Image (cartoon, rainbow, N blue to C red):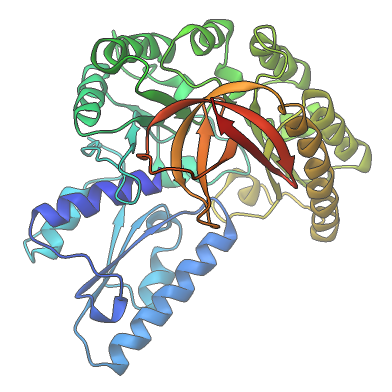
Length: 423
């Protein structure tokens, strides 16, 4: 989401005549787009603001340090003390551009009349693009800062999303990702608007008419409580949709899930995954997991390990619980064991690595469609991404365009990397 917001702002600023520089010491304006989901991300922002402020004082340069994104809500006073000149709560590029042009600007009240910015192809990978379809979240998971920083969920009108998709296809985008804190609840806040599944059918029709078999659609992120059979059917049956989903389960313990306010049980989660596994037994699902939340016991931690093994995730984003000021858990003063969380996370990472290795090895000999996504670090292979979101390296025998789609076969696995060939 932040990458899409940043890309949109960069393009808008360049249209206003601003020039981008890679060296912050040459910049007249330094804009930092922030994230509050993890403490480490916040610490990096604090460090950079201090660095940029010290450098401009040392060089006697009259540059501006501007903060946008989630930390505008959570850390405004601290960022101002560190030297930030202007802080914009909930990103709105019109206000930022006005401020940089030294025009009078008034920051809109948080999340009222939220404006969705124009989407652009990715600056670094122009075959990719991102379309935010919703902003904010209504779920209020107890550990999560997002509803406190981005506010209530606001959906973008489906007609506007369809027009964005058409324009991005015309501009050369081949892989377009729909973004939202919880895309599954799209449209529920707008009277007479279609729901997320219906939106996917609408967008698939756009792709079918403009660029059939040449454009893929992905989406992030889904909440299990809103995932249903209709959405699973759409993912499998719609030609433009990639055959993969990111579905965070967070914990294998029903008690911990209840404390997190996740609004589903372990058994309900498993049932939802098998909506897709009924179509393909190796249908790829990625996930998020938090260990060490509240008074999680060893038995409850082991339930998480069991769920990891029983479902089988080729990719998982694993975290130990870290307290976020402003969250429900923080207000309730939820107690947790930092040492136990750290130990469990280390074990979890090693366990998941072994599980993923076995799952990926099962792909050897299988055929799939891949999109050329980049050149690998060794400069000898193309880094390709399959429609199932698996990374496959293919030998770089000839020059190919990023975004081109080919059929490929997985021939081997080295360490944690799939190797294949075009067929």
